[in-house]
Image (cartoon, each protein chain N blue to C red):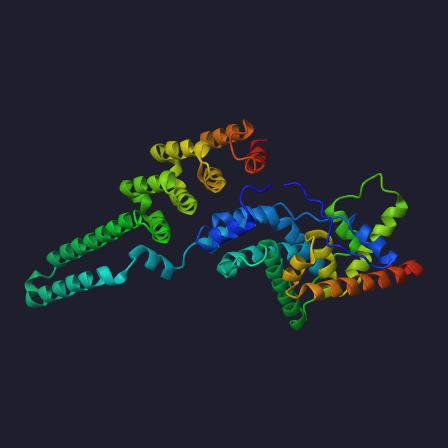
Length: 235
Length: 190
C-alpha cells in the first residue's frame, strides 16, 4: 500500500511554529523490518487458536443435551460390571471401545448438525470444531466445503476455508477451493483462500494463484499482496 | 477507496473472524510502527509493540462499538499499550537504548540526494528537537501531523475532548519551537 500523504489537523500558530509545522511533513517515516509481518501472522494464528475450554464448548456444544445420556451409559456399564464380575477382562475393554465409538459418533453428528444451524454463530462454532476433526472424516470435509462455497455469511465462508487448512493438498478439496478462488465475490473470502494457498498450497496451486494475480483476476487489493508474497520466493 | 471499511472489518473480527485482522494489519501497521517508534525511539521495541497492539485489538474487538472511527480507537489502544510499556520500563529501571535522530534517519532511508545540505541540517535539527520533547507532546504532534486530519478523531485517539486536543497541540508546538530555537542559537547542542 502506498504511503498516504496527510495534510494533518488544521494548525494555525505563530509564523515560526507554522514553519516548523510545514517542515514536519518532510521528516522521514521509518519502515518496519520485513520480519514484522511474518511474526504478526504467527502470533495471530496462535492467538486465534481457541483455548481448551473454548474447544470443549464448541466441540460438545450444548452439554445438557448429551451429558445425561453419556452419564447413564457409564452408570449402566459400571452396574453391569459390578453385577457380573466374570465379564471383566476382554468384555469390559470391548464395551469401553464401543462406548468411545458411540461418544465420538455423537460428537460427529452434533458437529454436522451445528454446520447446518440457522444461527451464524452456531455455524461458526461448528466450523471451528470441525476443523480439528476434518482430517479423518470425509463427511466433515464435504460439509466444510459446502460452508466454504455456499454459506451466506462471509465470516463462516472464511472460517470454513481456514478450517480446511492442510486439506487443500488433497485433490478433491484442493480443486474445489481453487475453483472458489476466482469466483469469490467477497474480498475477505478471497483473502482467506489466498492465505490458505500461501500457507498450505502445493507448488502448482501457488503458481496458479500467482497467474491469477498477474492476470488481475483477483480483488485489486489482493494483487500486490500475492505478488509480494510469492515473487521473492520465486526469484 | 477501500473495498470494506475498517469498521466493518473490526465488527467481523469481533464476530470471530480473526482473518479480517490481517487486512487491518496491512492497512495500519506502518503508521502504528512509526507512532510507537516516535514514542520509544527504539525500532525493536516499536516492532514488538506493533505486534502486541494488533493482538490486543483481536482480544478487544468486541469493545469497539462503532462509536467514532476505528483508526482513532486503534491509536488509542496503541498509545495506552505503549505508555504502559514505557512506565513498566521506568519502574524496572530499564533504559531502552535509544536510536539517536541521526541513526534513526539512516535506518529509515537515505535522504533525497537533491536536498540541500542546509535543508538536511535543518531537518536533522527538527528531528532532534522532536526527540527531546516529552512523550506526551511528541505523540500529539506526530498523530496530528501524520495520522489524523481533524481534531475530533485526534481527540478520540488521545482519549480527550477535541478542545483539549487543540490546546495540547498548540502547547506541544510551542515547546517544539522553544527547543528548536535553543538549538539554532547553540548548534553544539544538536
